[in-house]
Structure formats: structure tokens, C-alpha cells
Length: 273
Image 1 (tube, helix red, strand yellow):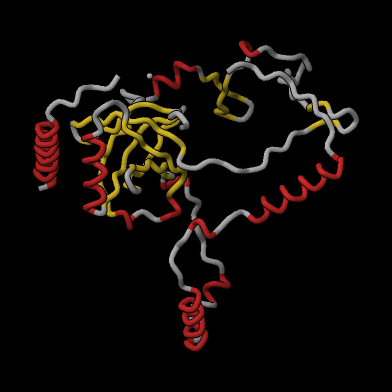
Image 2: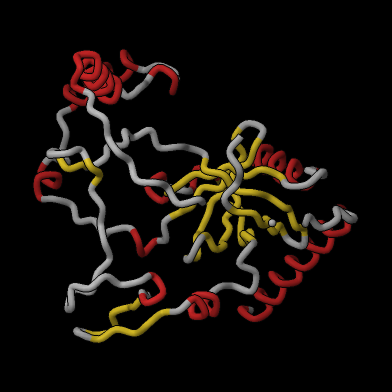
């Protein structure tokens, strides 16, 4: 089983749920290698100084951010650390929303959340509550070097953390004139389109769909290999390549969370009154 690439926790009020994060999907893109057609030697890329043309060792390479035309500042690991939240190993649930409220265009990358440790009680509680209420948890946390907004929702026996795009990441839309002119639809055309949709209406079966282009391309490649077109390629040598908190009294944590959240909303109402 594939190991999680991130370990941390989901914070649900005062409840801390230890979890690991794994990709919920994997790429099946075909992997093509670039070689020199003359001797089938692999193509390599060097990091070099564009002014001197000399190779640059890894310890002399730094990240910079352009702040003005022709000017940039060095950004260090310490700078990234300063910008992170207090706990970079936690996704903190900020709100719960109806699942249907989130437009699909906001969804980015899905990850599978798995409980860590011997006690999955809090994990199952959150999953079951979300399933029962039809709600999705909205959380924020850090993945790699950037803060991510995420939706946490039940999927079968598991919880899925799906990163979300921030509103500013979506491009603004402007309705083309052609669509404005076509806004008034012919009732007969609309009725015919509805009939076609009803005729093609069927349940969603993801297993019924597969990548036909990939399958055909692999078949062509296999055919060429069997015809004796495969040549020996010399690949370069490859370089050789986190404790759960005790469960405690979950009920008391939930009660304290409800009281804290209620007090916070009461203070907000008194300020706006």
C-alpha cells in the first residue's frame, strides 16, 4: 500500500484527529524518454550560469522573487517558515457548508485521509457526522510550501481532503456577444434537446469509461517492438533516494468546542448589535 506523503492532523474544534494524506488518484500518463537518435544515449539537462556558461553546483542555487523590473530578492527556507501558520502539520476546520454549495470549478486535487494510530474513533465520528448532515468541512493548512484551502467530505468508509482553488485563482468571465444573442431559445429546439438528454440518461458508472487513446498507442508501441524496432537504451544510474496524541475524553472536547464556538458567535452578535 502506498505510504502517505504528509502526516499531521485534522482539527475539529478542540478535537485533534491524527491522519496521513495520500493521493486519491494516480497519473497513468505514458512516460517517454528523450534520447540521442544517433546512439540512443539519454538526453540530460545541466544547470548552468547563463552569463558565464559554467555549471552551477546545487549549494550555489537559490530561489528569488521578482519585485520590480530587473530586481529580485532571495527567498530562503527561513522566509517560508516565517510565513507558515503556527502548526504547519494541521488542517484546521473553519466552517461547515452544504456539499452542494461548492461549485465544481473550485475543486483541485483529491487526497485520501487515513487515520493514524490505534484509535480511529474521532475520525469515524467526523466522517459519520458529515455523511449524516450532508455537510462538507472547509479547512486550511499547509501542503509543501503553500497554504491550501480544502474541502473534507466522506467518500465510502473514508474521508477525502480535496484542495480548493481560492476565489482569486479563478479567471473572470465575460459573456461573449454570441451567447447574448443566443439567449432566447426556440421552444421546439429546447424540447428536442431535453428528449435527447432523457434518451441518453443513465447512471454514473466510472468503470465503463477508459482511456482508449492510451490503449491504442500502447498497442502500436508493442507492435513496433515485436517487429524488431526496439533498441537497447543505456539509462543513467539513479541516485538513492513521523506520535499520536491520546484519545482522551472525546465528549468533553466536543462540549468545550460547542461552548467556545457559541461564545464566539455571541460576542460577534453583541458587537454588531
